Length: 239
Image (cartoon, rainbow, N blue to C red; front, side, top):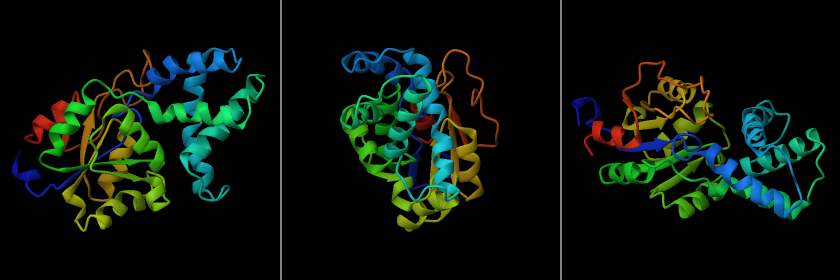
């Protein structure tokens, strides 16, 4: 590990897309649950549209249109919106929660568990996700992700990229910003963290959005570390 990282104490991770394959997991799981509840549609495009409502839903909270609302509730509302858009009958509250909790069961990329485990030997490893705490804990249990802690937008009642989310981790850990590194596959997330003084690591996830990905296909900032995988980031940090 170089002198630039000698004081690094904590690695926090974006989760959706960086640690887990949200798209592949949903595309695999939605059809069977749809059949069980008598819903038929193009589940691949449904998964993409559901994720596409993620930022607009959080924007409603940031703008004050909605009071503080966690991601499970926003996902469930977006699910109902998509059903209506596609002319599908709503399967009821209990079933809507079944669909929403598919986000709790997202599978990790092949390098995630091993890479995070290596980093854990030297650093505190934790989430900093807009996903709510229950979602993150359930996902970790399902996937075997060895987090030390799950920080969430829910923890600080601020969704990324609000500075209070990144700096909330810094304050909670009694550290300076440069002692915390955000690991993410998304340039805008890293840019916001960097503006708060955090160290940054970009992880390539060139198929997060499917075979024709253009967004976040490559790093576009002066990040402290760039890795093809989380295992690669661990190597570059001396783990």
